[in-house]
Length: 453
Image (tube, rainbow, N blue to C red; front, side, top):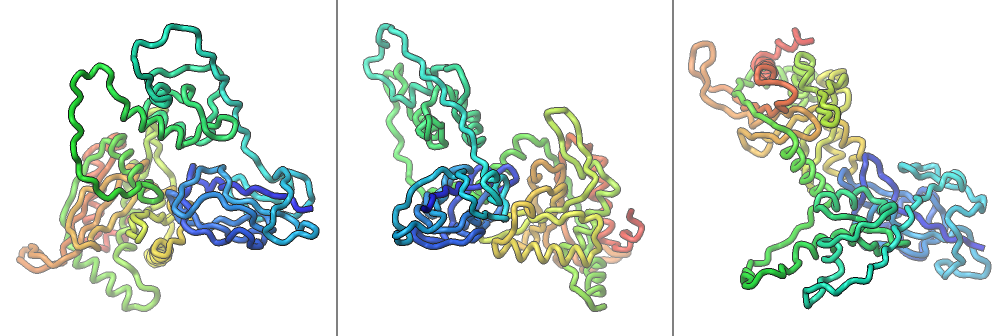
């Protein structure tokens, strides 16, 4: 007798709470093997294929392409085993997902998942729904028209006792951002579970609630309806991170023009000597690693809860990469231990993975410093926004021929503008200026790197 196993959207790591379905890779009625990818989803970090930990016949799918699902919500169900006298895809007897039927399971573990035995199947324990308080007998409200239920929940919350029936941290965050009392909402999910849609309805209802005391309401403005683009996936993550950076970090920017003629000559000589080619971005990454060794306070983060600056021992340099899905920041780990050729090879590998959508969440997180080469877009300067929770970012403009005084004579040189944005909580202008001046000196005289730590 076959049993039906439910496979929920797993925790894909790095604190992600939801994912958008990009492409279904199986249909209802298809036979799937253990660890076979069944759906491609886009998180705030990357596009990944999700393998199913069960083998059998797909009996149902939950969610359409383009729909966003919270972690822990069902993705699909699989009939494990072959029912006697029953065709594949036909209805089968349902059984609890944790039933001990002895079948072998997946060895492919996403965070919190893996089915090497029935015990490895972890199920979320939903908190008990809050008890519904009985409304006390009282005179009816003076308003002749009662407000909608959702509006009443926002404007006159019924504060109940007991735990709040919420699993998703995203739901809690949305409610907190809009000042909603989750105890006052009635969840539409199983056992009264409060879903994101419940919170969104309450937010919408609160923003459109009529004002009872307005004697002469203002006429509605006939605003032109434009094209709406949802802020979700990678684009939504970029918006959230940059917005948080602006809200939390008191940043400041300084900049300098530098003569990059000698740097380009050094790169040409290195590439002419044979071996792997060295990119300009790799040279700047090498320079930044040396500069951070001299000014380690800029390789740090601020612990606001404890009121401390945390200077980090390892240098993980992220670099901004533009892709069809938006801006991503792959991270070169342990950049301070890599040679210039190794940095160039790793940057090239991560860039190709970014363009093909093959970056993993781990390759997009954990950076301690970011390098932004906006010169590839043909612009000279910028004021970079710090990649929260880091403390600094170096921006590199285009390298272009300009008039320059060289050895007392006016000459045409290859000039680049460098912009350096830093968290003013971790250092003052002297440290930031020293860092940027050291970077500029290395650009103008690459032999300075030979003296670097």
